[in-house]
Amino acid sequence: MDIKQVTVFGGSGFVGRAIVRALAPEGYLVRVACRRIELAERVKTAGDVGQVTVMRANLRMPQSVAAAIAGSQAVINAAGIPFERGRQRYRAVHVEGARAIAEAARAAGVQRLIHMSGIGAESRSSKNRYVQSKVEAEDAIIAGFENATILRPSVIFGPDDVMFNRLAKIATQAPFVPVVGNGHAKVQPVFAGDVGAAAVAVLARPDTVKSVFELGGPRVYTYREVAALTLREIGRDKRIIGVPAGLMKIAGWFAEFLPVPPLTHDQVDLLTTDNVVRGGAKTLADLGIAPTAAESILPTYLDRFRVGGRYNQHAPA
Image (cartoon, rainbow, N blue to C red; front, side, top):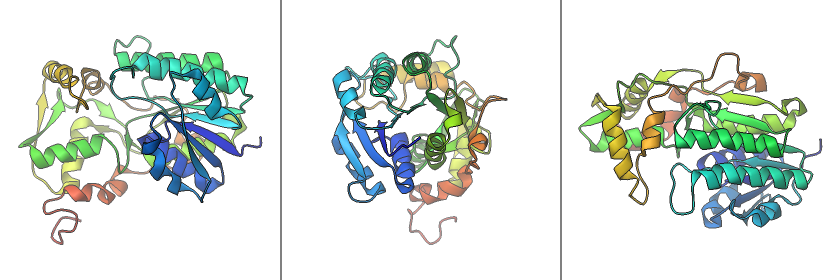
């Protein structure tokens, strides 16, 4: 295969930026396709001048999707929304958007298509609307482009992540750190840089077509352990208190009326379910990638939440 140009849908987002930063050093020309191009300007610095370009594309408009793919030999779909707002609905973005990308990629003769999904997307019995949309998105990708590769990461961490940054912010403002239920549900956080590396590795290996890889870090934590790890990193002594999932869902439902909800009832539901790599699944190891431990990365961006701030000489190392 001779892949020179790659279109990355959702390249302005947290996961998309990590993928672009992994592609550029390998010499690929990268076209970042996104709805709001002003959010993608900073990702241009991932490559040399002109190597990373930005193009406006809306997954609800198939013509713009086809235009963004034209001329590329590979496509990566990292587009997604954490909550619904206005016309940005799970079905429109995750499902119909994936369908539009797959069909346009096939029509354009694209060689490779990589779809970013998530652990749990095999759960067809799930009543969670977010998970259902991920399941249907995978179906749409495979139906439209049978040689696609699907990557299912666990919760992704890195400087702009949601999980660790949110917990750290709560710890600086609240008298305690809440976890959903007893906090015993499991999660296997994976570093954003490793997710980007996985996408690059898949592109380089023709044998990864028609495959699904589940991406997790080197350690499985409970959400209570994640909260404790966050508190250790920022040097704050706060109680970790379990809040009944029912109450959290009610709070999440009301929060959805806010412009940017801090938590939705769908997200609460996810926090009560294990999010770990299944036994027997293809993993980062199958792509030759050693997963990065959260403990080695968290100090590089959570230090701003320490007592006295990032530059406090007496803050814990």
